[in-house]
Length: 311
Ligand SMILES: *Cc1c(COP(=O)(O)O)cnc(C)c1O
Image (cartoon, rainbow, N blue to C red; front, top):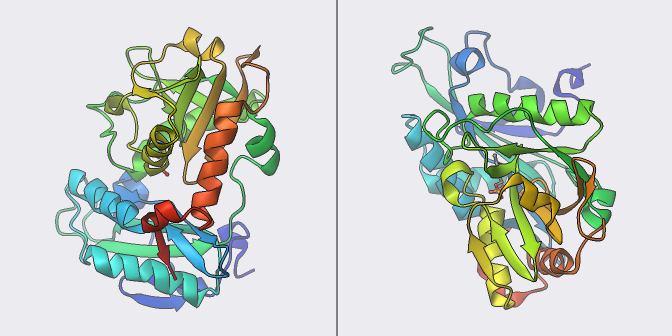
């Protein structure tokens, strides 16, 4: 009963407004402003078990920096320092005994005034950590997923502030994701308001053609930390990368297409709109970058040690 409301996700403690509270006590009032209008920001972070028997959070400072940037874009003043939130992430993992898992920091506007000027409402912060496997499935990571180009456009860059992970903006992503699932696909690829490929519902997208990697440029996409990591890994491995527009038909004729994100990690796409991509599985460039990514997060690649914050 206690956890029925959290969809099976459960744990010991949640960090709320500066302290660890019992999981079932991390509740809010229905007047919580964010519930009504979606003004709030969040992060998604992963912690991995590393080869040396320890655990490490992947690119923790970058994620917390982006949380504060998202808040700044939305005029939300977080009443904690970045260091305090980084510590909260570590505390939360420890308090729940997690060696690996997903961490969800959430900045939300508490109750007080209703209406569209919540300037005097409290800005609240929660950090939740729980176990989580592969977002798009083990099979997806190995053999690729099936995607469809969404009928929903990615919000215009001056409507949705694309550099922030803003709660309410994800209605756009949810519409696209559910449409894709109801139509029998695994994921949605969204076009921007000019009709160019932007990203998937919650992942950045890369195409490979003739050994070259291309990903849509920043204006209409979220500045993904996995995206930036993959760009750096590719350059290190001598794979040329460009940030340039991708059209819908270019998706179809790519040798490989893959998605990146904290949730999706590096997941190949084997089919888009019933067109087979390349050989219809995980292509060689995707496999190489994916293997490098998993080596790095599990601490097998010392060169990228600075991307890991050990518990
Ligand atoms: C979070 C997110 C991503 C992936 O970003 P990461 O930093 O790699 O997790 C991509 N697109 C959207 C829309 C997102 O919300």
